[in-house]
Amino acid sequence: MGVVRTIVFPALRLLVWALIAVALLWIAFVRTNRSEDAVATPSAVVQPPNATVTVGDVTNTVSLQGTIQADPATTVKATATGEVARVRAEVGDTVEKGTPLFTVKVTVEAPPSTAAPTDPAAPPAAPTTKTVTVTSTTGGTLATLDVLPGQAVTIGGDVATVSPGTLTVSAPLTQAQQYRLLAAPSTAKITVPGGPGTFECTGLRTGNPTTPQQQTPDPNQGYVDPYADPSASMTGASVSCAVPPGVQVFAGLSATVDVTAGTATGVLLAPVTAVRGSVGTGTVWTVADDGTQTETRVTLGLTDGNDVEVKDGLTEGQQILQFVPNTDTPSGQSGAYGAGS
Image (tube, rainbow, N blue to C red):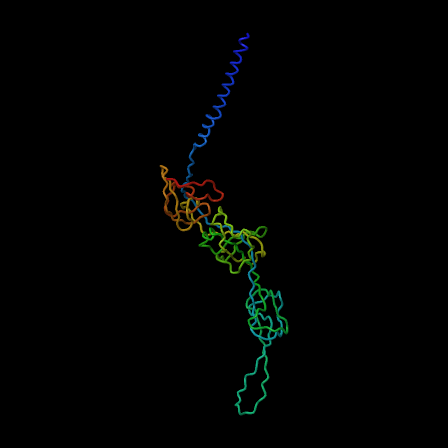
């Protein structure tokens, strides 16, 4: 028994400690290296998704956010130089073109004498006066009348303004929206939150505003967002149309402007994310049965912002890349992929 306690047990204890040390060394070096190798090696390859060219209908409706604005007043100018004799209208009056606003007493100097130098000097002729009536140059409501009896006025000076009393809906355009409205119609559907039901406005115009808009200074002016979509930047252009008479809306209210610029039925459609370019011509990448990708030029038509009409270059059922290779994914869509071979 003494031999077991003094020799066998200590030997077994040393053997156990040796096994523990070997196990720790294996975990620390061998297993760690294998784990690192496994992490460094990719286990899957992500393939870019495909889309199928389909046949369907597309309506090019552009929805814009705008405001209702009062049409600018017309300035009336004095047509004579003299003294105001009588004011014949008041602010707030309804006037027509030609309505008298006030009269001006004009002094007319006597013509120079035509007598011969040898004739006796004649007394100078007294000046005469005449009355000129200043009238409204347009119809509407007299908004201002800046004259008083006895006041001196000068020909060409601003003396009054006439408001037409009409309203216009105006909405700014981004680059993408302006391209979609190259062939804009003459009408639009207007919806005013909390106001009357949707109504149609006429005389739709596209272009730069006729009057400068007051802009709030941008604290981030000069900063360029690298992730911003360039097609979403504002162009300074706008669409506008007249509010029909009898529709009760007010200047300063917000409004949604829906402009429908064409409809196509039974046409080939492709996702806009699959096309490089959006007006006239573009490029897509077709995918063959063996996975080969080929850059293909196509002719484009209408778009609704999600799908675009393909007039030439593709056939129904053909497979194409869902996203243009080597470009950032548009906002709100998942996946960006490089070009395949």
